[in-house]
Length: 217
Image (cartoon, rainbow, N blue to C red; front, side):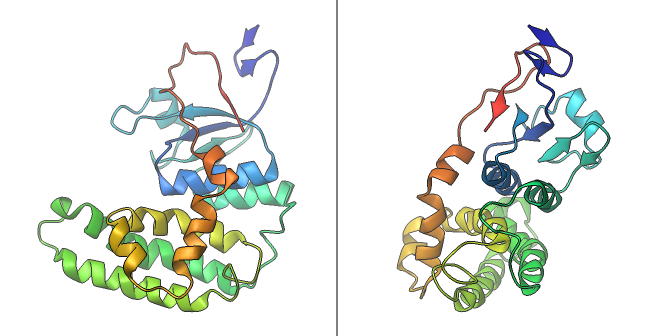
């Protein structure tokens, strides 16, 4: 039996998401860790539904629709979920972790995009962007203290950063694997090979208003 908010009487937050988006990946990982159920609505970015554009202030995924507010930034979705339930202690990290998260978005992601989508930036030298991205990754590699950034267990910063490193690595995975990182390759593989990542990457069909709700995780 359906109602306006869900199925069989469920009343859960709505997450507008896109499977391959690194911002959406990290939000879904946090929801998995927190074991917070949402109604997942898979958005096709070339055909954004009206309901999504009405909910989202930015028109970008992920977007979490709660009863009384919208959370429109992925890192805010992660923190919201983890403050409700953080069984893996992801929020227990040094303050520097938040600076690293900010850097990956402001310094690394622009150069990642200019490398991966070079044809979109005809006035840009993609080699310069790639070198700047590599420089960032070399510095990140040096910051890994144990298996992860802050020891033997991942923290919020690890989860918030790895989807972007994965996206860069997949531009040329053979090159990435042969570069000679001290720890970065194993760090990335620890996430990409995890059950958490597999669950976060479950495929969903494009959401349509008339469709039965799909719940995640």
